[in-house]
Length: 333
Image (tube, rainbow, N blue to C red; front, side, top):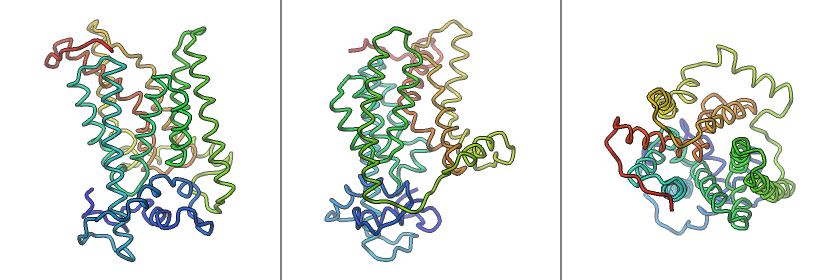
């Protein structure tokens, strides 16, 4: 979806709210939806680069004034940079911590840039691109055991999107689950969970200073239960739901099938596939809190710190089994 072809009225998911946030991020009279009001980091970055030129061309969006068009362009520009940096982060992660050959690292980086959910939600006026970037950064800082940098980055990340901290806590839960019972690594993971607490405190304080009176998702126990049970209702499975939630994950599903073939043929994959439990966990969590049927898959896609190493290891194993062209491996640094 290019800048020129974006239709504000047809595709706008947060455009109007984020335009207002860019103009007046700390205006106490701004009562946008609860989950938009506090995602101020990208709007602040966009506001700080308002002096840059923008691509002033006719597009399908009927913006109220030219400033909105400028904000829209700069927002997309920032998102493009976020996604580029995200791809670089995963290249570094794969090569440095998993010993993946550079060729596969490049393939995974391009996959991140061109995947369905990246194209659908990271290159429009949403905060998903920055969310992917902060999740990648926090995961790398956790791997490096840089606790102070992690703490400061998590406080910054909470104002990009609260989803960053939720995803990191889910990742830590999964990492904890698959460590040995008395492993020191478990204590490290618990410590990093506590390092997420200050960011939640800052968000709580910010919410008290700038309250909202509108809520986008479900806020009742019965509502959560009904949302969860909708997973078992055949009416839920519209073409839109299936496409966004399952078809968009075909690369991951194909990798799981390839993994099964590798196991049958006695080939080793040096990655614990049980970590993929993150996919149904995030998906069902998004469904339960009331995310609409076009977005559960988009939220589940934030599990890239698990998906990307898994996909890379599958490609490496297929190469070593001679199914794919041979790729020279190298040792982890």
